[in-house]
Image (cartoon, rainbow, N blue to C red; front, top):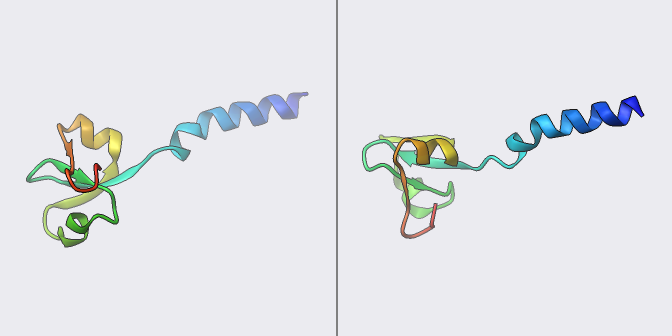
Length: 68
């Protein structure tokens, strides 16, 4: 029983990490894109890869093409 309890606790701790979505965030325009978006691929100088949650916290808005 202790093994199952430990497994459940471990799973609960890492669950948010499993569902974190990485996006490409443009620090100049404050738009974020899915990594495969045409605009994300073209962005070379002002873009960083961060969690979608962090992009939203920085005031980012989703791309109108891919929906971020």
